[in-house]
Length: 139
Length: 110
Image (cartoon, each protein chain N blue to C red):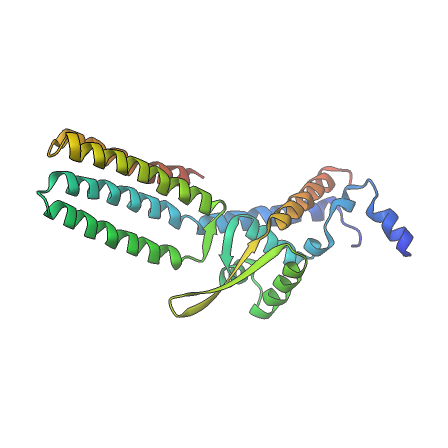
């Protein structure tokens, strides 16, 4: 392996750190992914809860399907995925799923057309994406 | 150096003995360092980041794959073929140990 001086070791560590920074910068697309996911999730809940049936459900569902299709295409085109992407994304989707299920089921049964419930619900459903995007941006 | 001497050197107490011979090569070290910050990265991204040619990356990635440090996955995005590189769990462990050895060397008397 030959002689390897302290300076060489320090240079190698610096190089590794620089490469890590470059790679992490290239994973910042996931900030936008999560923010769009969060905002779209909130808008879908608002449409379902506040727009007259069946238009609200139809518009909300179509809008959500289009957003998810667009985000999936966007993610597939990226050249690098952040470390821990799979686990982080699973938490995002699971959190959204739980909140969406609770807001929608309780809202449709107990609060149909109640703006306060659906606005609060939309914010709650948007939170996983918004918080995820915020945390991702701070990494 | 005889085999016995190599064995003795490989088990010495100096931090340099913690360096991994496969990762130690500059290009391979850069590839692994880039992959350490990601879950997976496209071949072309690693090539551009490490600043090597396709053939050099291909050769070094094959060496790292043979050592069990890197996984190479092929797939398609639409109709375009893509190759993805990622560090295996073993590769991450070895890289972490290699970096510990580098820090020890950098922090030591040299």
